[in-house]
Image 1 (cartoon, rainbow, N blue to C red):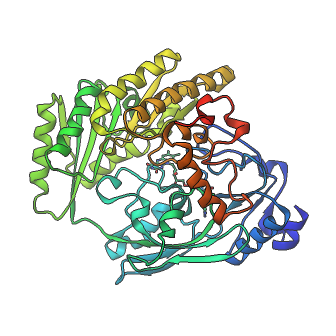
Image 2: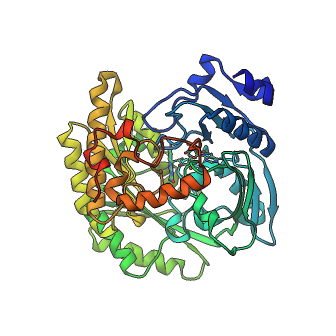
Length: 467
Ligand SMILES: Cc1cc2nc3c(=O)[nH]c(=O)nc-3n(C[C@H](O)[C@H](O)[C@H](O)COP(=O)(O)OP(=O)(O)OC[C@H]3O[C@@H](n4cnc5c(N)ncnc54)[C@H](O)[C@@H]3O)c2cc1C
């Protein structure tokens, strides 16, 4: 602590008990208290900090806004949490080249707001976009409702500046769309802070679509809503977004946001198409017809920007609205081939019932990216979270068995590292570990994340076996 203050000055270091408590949790369910928190203001500060930690063998845990849903920013092995809250400037908006250069602490929505006067936006739009940072988006390779047609964060980042664990500053990529050599930008995007600290990001900007059509369709059951998702894609239409929620989620949303969702529907779809105005009404009509063929009881098309925003406010506020139903939730992030939606949603329901917990579903249906929100009440004792975790493991196991994955966008973090062997053979994990060892030889960058650790994963028999 004294060494950090001597290095960076007292204004950039937090160490009191109360201050540290604020950094012991994120959007997920696990907690751990850091030994110190550092608030760098420049790449030079970050590099000096990394050199210091390297010399003293102290773990470094990067943190953006702490909205992560897999415990990525939690210092599970102690050490220094590096908050990028003060590195939050948009450094350049390059309209002719459709690029922006930003510091990692810039909030996702602030970038789109800043470039909107130029008719541009940053495509990846996590539902947390009012709070989450671009550094966090890069680290998690975040998606969002509108990444179905336009791709996730990795498709929108062309360059990054990184500080490695020994303090070396490395610049990878730039403004060009393609770079020669190894795709190290791609390697860092999604590496969850385990390879280095991202200190600058060059992103693609995209022209705002000329127009949009947004539909809300209500179905008697989730089966019919799920079948509609596959039918829309099979008809050759690729909407910019297809989001789904069940009745429990819609009830929470209506109590909190008043988005105008029907309370009696078994399943609700929010579908959006955008692009050149010509053809949008035809796509909207075809989607509407497909919804009706699949027993939609109501299809409502937003007739104004305000109505569209209201429909989206419901979806984007859905996780927060869970507070109306339960004091705690444990969100899963499994991916499945979208044609398997009906079976897996049934299994999700059964897993909840088996563990005596309610489960609400709000998710990126077009991507087959499930987000079962397992509701529990930690005030009733530790058993509640244990049962939620057991139900979560059953759901993720089923996703992998269905040909999917344990995470679509929230990352592995410290929440799913023990589950990695469900999806990867030990040789796959060993190859990933060699990349980690090459770039972070002392293992100080966000330790205890992504890879199964003997101390935490002992209880999962599959974590130490080869598939
Ligand atoms: C209500 C809600 C809705 C959400 N919806 C979505 C969604 O639709 N799509 C989606 O993908 N995610 C979603 N998320 C998850 C989360 O918002 C994203 O993962 C987001 O990118 C995290 O950003 P953050 O700034 O909060 O990062 P943090 O939570 O602070 O950190 C996340 C990870 O990034 C690392 N990190 C942060 N900054 C840096 C840096 N500068 N250099 C290196 N590593 C760094 C951390 O160590 C950690 O591993 C949602 C979360 C909530 C709470």
